[in-house]
Amino acid sequence: MKQSNQNWKKRLHEIIYEADTPAGKLFDVVLLILILISVLVVMLESVETLQSVYGSYFSIIEWGITILFTIEYILRVVTVKSPLKYIFSWYGIIDLIATLPKYIGLFVTRTEALLVLRSLRLLRVFTILKLARYVGASNDLIKAIKASKAKIGVFIFAVLILSMVLGTIMYIIEGNADSGFTSIPRSIYWIIVTMTTVGYGDIAPVTALGQFFASLVMIMGYGIIAVPTGIVSSEYTSVKKEPINTQVCNNCNETRHQYKANFCHNCGEHL
Image (cartoon, rainbow, N blue to C red; front, top):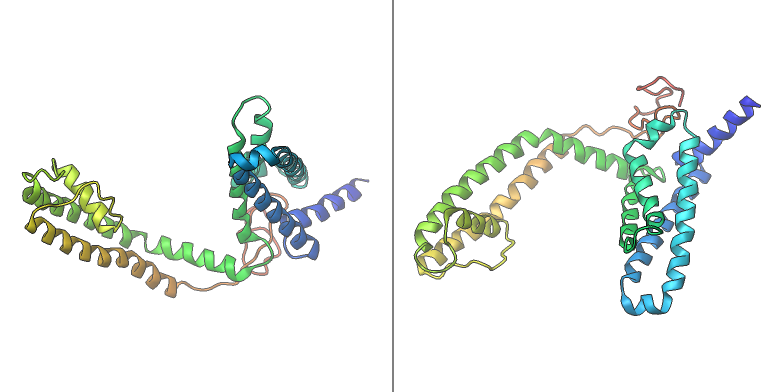
């Protein structure tokens, strides 16, 4: 009986957590479709004209999906050997947050919009359907960003120093022109907004020299934006590409296993 119960949990774990079988792939596809439908319904419900006509239908759909998510969450908990590790894991917390809002709405009004938190569950798209090229690409990108964080940190520090210098110069040029450059910090704010090409337009130079200087800052901004991209791109091309293992440990929910590993590197459980 005990062996039969363990086999049942193991088969269910493979369907819910793995993407190596047709049943597992189907489960993940259905899950993502439900998430998308749920988020779409929440957005449509915020439109008053649609809510007044289809509000009851929206509510039925939301409750149906909430019940399905609740069942799925319970199954995720009972099919792992260490439920607390899943409950307090990153995905466990997201799954719980995505399930609670509708129930909270029974006691607290105007919490319907919180249902859009279900969109967080779309983060699972990187671990489903055995999409190794997408999982691998995301892992390579993370490695590249980590490898280039020191260079990017130095670059950002240099940009901040440059912003202080340019902001001070702009304050000297426009400070007495009644154009909004009332202090050095405000001028630094304008420099940052301009160099990042955001351009709110709440402050603008009015003198000829100020406008000329602003033109130089704008041109400089294009080059500054390109630098971090070049740093990460350089690191990305040098990252060693490794095959991806999408298996999830049944005991500790660890996912970062070496390719074709038979045992979990974290707890030693057989995969």
